[in-house]
Image 1 (cartoon, rainbow, N blue to C red):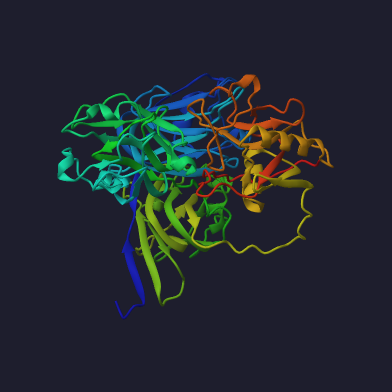
Image 2 (cartoon, rainbow, N blue to C red):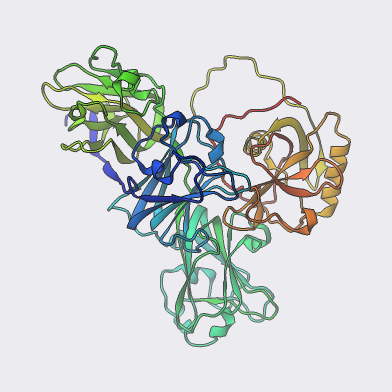
Length: 616
């Protein structure tokens, strides 16, 4: 190397799709060609007319599951959606576990699917679990589940989940003597209190609590509690573990993960949350009741940071290659065609030459997690043999960083190859064969990544006028009724972009004031309006997307909708203004709020769907 002209880094790993051709089952079969095995046949063709997709009957909570036959360390799952019915997958969840029971509390939720565009593939990082079964569950009534391909990638280099509490910050309701809250996350399971490694609240306190702030939202799979060993083991009886993103009541109003009936003196017990893994930044242990003492000798939280699903950012981006053969030009490999057939215009091919290459410009720096290359399926598949995937930040010969994400094996025996790139940053992805007299041919390149800097958007049309709205001050917040009609997820993003979040109601008084606001609206509203109500997919619990606790409730029949209902909630637009579940894709008016309580952490939600509205 001469000076600092460039840096060369080997950073990738070839991933193995352990789901291909494995046994798959589903809750029902809605068409003769829509059997469960179509989602693991190795064909990522999202065109429904090609009959390579699964389909269930219309039913409550349809599901699909693949048996990997053994337990794997899973690093990612990809889902390819159908072009004809792209909205069917909205709201589905991906679960991983060693049990084929849907509600097993040891199952781990890899991701929630807000939306996947038709005939596109989305990459879901979930390198925090082991399992034999991967399940896609679609909650709600009268739903149809369609999947065109499910890929499950394992990697030998995956590591067990870390105890993220070690890097957290602990607090408690009070402190006795030297037994600070931090003693419960010092990494020591020393159970003798006098040795100085246990936390301890002051004596005879009402509802004593202990909390660890994980500093960012995590997917928590298990919590380990070590009890005091020298006395008083019964003090922990009846304690509750709570996990969430809200700091209301010091986090003690967050959803309950599990209850502690009893832990033997000096022992450590592992708790899995009811219904599977839970998402949150704060983990609390609280003992309800008067005259209580809370002592913890160690709290371990095994979790992974919550991550967003990744789109194929190479789709339709500018592509070039060293030479081209007939009509097999570079742009064919980023056209979205995944059949691997040249006659369908899917493949790019160079001439016979020295060091042939193909390159895509992502137009901005990205953090690249994985690259998938689809090989030819009409012969000449060896023209990809030995190709290397390289990522670089600039095309300049000076000051560039070059990462090698992976190399296609010499024996090309699979339809496609996926490489884990370790979240390296770069703008250009190049596929090259570093040999003399070679032909390079490939039929689709997918780059799963997130932008490292905001994309530059050139305005082309005048900004449309804002939708009709009316508002008032409510409990220190500005509350705004919006007349535009959007689906639930689009309404959420509208409120988060222009205000703070969809509305959360704290009391009957606030409910009545909002009812009056709806009555006096100067513009027509829909029969229901969206609120920030959302249900946990694997259970009956509802929560506010603003991260605040749900103390006040106003459900129909005084009962929250059960787990078979839609996970999106709103309020009736007329008497008696009761809350209820509504289909998430329904276009309704909605109510935004300008802010939340101090310390509230909004629940993360992702969607790749472009907002659409209906005229009022």
